[in-house]
Image (cartoon, rainbow, N blue to C red; front, side, top):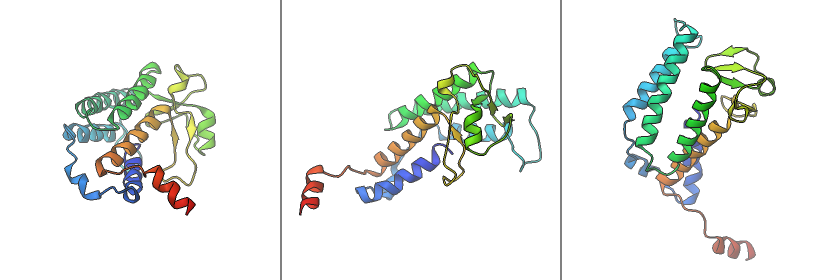
Length: 187
């Protein structure tokens, strides 16, 4: 989800910048099947309340880490695409925070409170007041008006920026010519 919403927003921003949605058909992501497999593994690890099973924590952590390894492989294979290096940096940052904190993404209690969330452990996230590598953990809360607002990390920001950049690049969006903008505003 961290990648999907910024990618969609990037497509919307691309339109007034000359981007064309039909160029998305030319986007060739390599090893896309592995990305789908990683998503399926994450759903198996953290089924939430809507699916009829519960995965024990140690198995869920192992599955989540395995899914991240698959995502790393997909990102590396697609590194030639604009924005994917940012996605890789964000994914690596999040993975580093998780591994350094025993398999869960730490969430700072003040971020949880700001987002209106109250839990000790939820899916792959765990409230921690003093995590290892605190600058990499979920430390900020998204505003309530953001769809599916939650808490997020510096890695999530990098992933989101990467998705936004990828959408702009793939659609062929171009930055406005500053000389034309100045002429239009003066005259």
